[in-house]
Each structure stands twice: as C-alpha cells, then as structure tokens.
Length: 112
Length: 114
Image 1 (cartoon, rainbow over the protein chains, first blue to last red):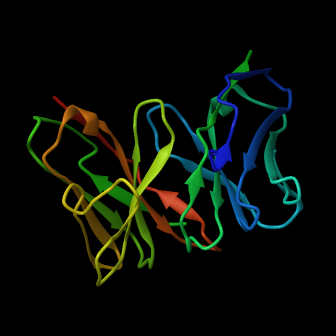
Image 2 (image 1 turned 60 degrees about the horizontal axis):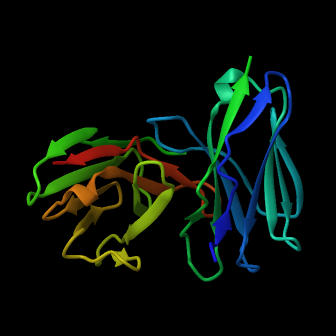
C-alpha cells in the first residue's frame, strides 16, 4: 500500500474556477503535511504546509486537513493558466524525524 | 526559506563513470537530503546527509553506489558511481529550514547516462 496517494490526473479546470487537489495518507500518526508545485523541468516549490485539522488559507490557496479521515487537500481559487503544473503532496510520517514521503503528484491543467 | 544552488545543472555521462553533484546553501542548516526523480515519477529519498557523520541511506540505496559528503553545515556532495543508463534521472538536494519539517529544494541536476 502506497503511503501517500494522489490521483495522477490530469485535472482540467477552466480559468477562474476552483481546482481541488486531494491526497490520502496511510500513517495515522503523521503530523506535518505539505503541498509543493512543480513546473515541468523545474524543482518542487513549497506552496503551503499544515499541521492542524481544519483549513489554512494563503492568498488563493487553501489547505484542508482531516486527520480522522487521513485526508489533505489543496484548493486553488480563481485558477490561472500559470497554475498549470504538477502538485505534490508530502507527509512527514511518524518516527521518521524530518523525512518526507511524497505522493506521485496530480497534474493540473487550467484551460482558457 | 533558503537559497540553494546545485552544480552541475545537467550532464551527459558515459556508463561506468562517476559524477559528483554539489549542493550549496546560503545559510547553515542541520538537515540536508538527497532525492532522485526519475522521468515522470515522484521524488524518492536517497539519503539524509549528516554533518560530521556518515549519511543515512534509505532502503534500496547504498553508500558504495551513492557516496555522500557533508563537510559543513552549508555544503554537501552526492556521487553517482559506476553509472548505468538506469541512473538517468534528476537529482535534487533539499534542506530543512523554517518551521517544522519544511524542506526547500535546489534546482536539480539532470543526468543522462549513455
């Protein structure tokens, strides 16, 4: 069983719409959760991190965490073509110090 | 955050040779990591580079194949030894900076082995 699972996509949304990206994880004791954006040919760029249940907002981005359901999501409001990228979910599993386990990523396409 | 540079940015190598990749950070950091990202795949952690001691390798990665140095708190190297075409990949270093386990990535080294 994969430790961090994401739908590979592509997820296609029209410009201006809300994009919803989802991630599930297997380690119930995980405490830290991260979303990275990776443009083609570039390295991952941190978008947000979240530690507590609930929502965390930063500009057009909202991360949502539900530890009971082992589920973390990223919402992108007013999606722009420049948001087209692969979004990687990363989790810090229990007892792994600072290590992160990455999902396979969801490719987002924002269409005009 | 942290500003991270890697050298070389890309290279084409012959099988059987070795390549050393450098990672430089603009501030002192405790934790540095090396990842591999094969074409179309996600990131796989190779090892944690520990300052003053041997690196800690993940399952499937060994020191003879991927020796790592960490001479100080701002610098690390990863060597890919006795390369084969299967080693063609992007190699990324990252550092832990800021709150919690937040990691920031360098620009990566794109390696093609012929």
